[in-house]
Image (cartoon, rainbow, N blue to C red):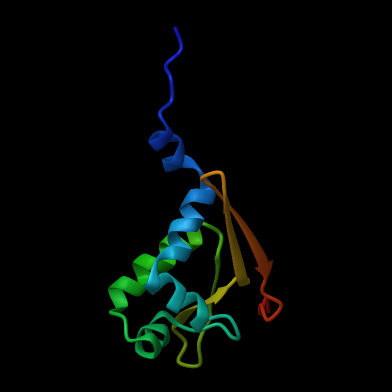
Length: 114
C-alpha cells in the first residue's frame, strides 16, 4: 500500500514554495534589492542593509538554494579570494488563485558574468 503524502510534506520539497517564502522574508528582499544593479561582498551587503553579517550569509545560502542569487569568487587586489553576490532576478510577480501561488520571475539584465 502506497503512503499518502501530506500537503505540508509536499510544500517542504516544492521549490515554488521555497521561493515564495524567501520573497516573503523582509531580510531576503533587502538583500536581493541591494545586489540587483551590481555584485557585492557579503560585508558590503550587511553594512548597506544594516543586517548582521551572519544573517546575510544565512539568507544568501537560502537564496542560492532557490537559484535567486549568483555567486562568483575571484582574487581581489590584496591577493585574497573575494566572493561577490548578485541577484539573478530583477523582479517577481506573485499571483494567488484557488489557494495556489504562482511566481513569475524576471531575469536580471545587469548580471555581471565576467
